[in-house]
Length: 272
Length: 158
Image 1 (spheres, rainbow over the protein chains, first blue to last red):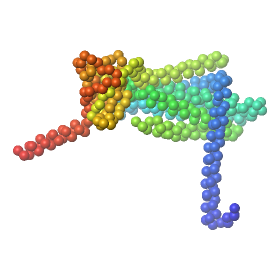
Image 2: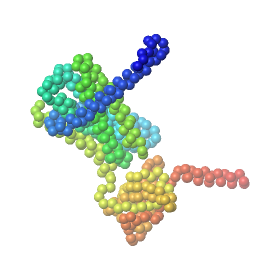
Image 3: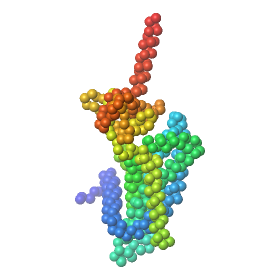
Image 4: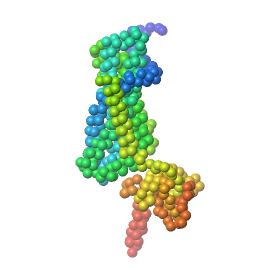
């Protein structure tokens, strides 16, 4: 290619276009790297199921340890939904629909999404930091020396553990939230308990609402766990690198969850 | 903590998760109220079904006896063709009438069955002959307006 003269607007424009191209190629490369890593991880998943104890230990670490924050947040969200929902609904004389409002918003939206955001903060960061430090301490390299693929031994069990834990946590979040709004709505404010449950049962469908909510949380489980593992595995093996990777886990997971949530909601609930 | 201890804790976690799911399915959603066991289908044609939706309850004397399973437009009569699924343990006389009613002022619409006095019962696949359409608020208001306008017109002529 003929070299452009290094002055004038043409050269500046050339530089800009080249920078844009480099940026676009970088983004594409990153996406491709992510996708290739994801495929590799999925390939390592079936063999990891054979060493079930590794998976069980990860469910314990990811799931059990997240219980406190998930249950406490669920209860708090339920309380607040009960209060705020009652405030708005009572203006229209529809305070009996409180149960329906709370159950639908929890089961369809808040349960999966808030659980995923908390999950990214509580479990995702710990996964990234753990793997990043394993890398910094050259434990992963040592495994490779022993002909053990760290993706099969370290990453895959964590991946499965996260996918198992997320829907269960989201279901607990929704259930505790509904109980919380029952405590506030029926116990504190005095909404009729029969109407509270009857309106809820009349308007919430097992497959359309609860089922789709569970499906959402499974997708979020895959996304959050994958982002955490990828960031840890690809982190720079320095204290600063691990710190950056941990931060990126939270930011990227949250953004991915919010974007996926919009897409999934549009696909699942857009048709009445 | 030993292997057994971790397995127990994870078992509890999974159990708790499934309990939450069962709670959501049974207490929050309509799995328990879905018609179980044997049902039979009836159809009814309405001139206007209003805001009736699939899965709306079918009630007789206020008791839910079934659900609406399908709504379609009859191509020949241009009426709304509503398919009802009624629990097998209930049976209704042949001259039962169906009407579309509203629960409360702004509530959901449902199908009300009003049993008649015929000796024979409706069998599976039968059509309910006597139907009453949904009350459409706009029609009601326009009727009222036309009526009062006509009366007002009469007043000025006097």
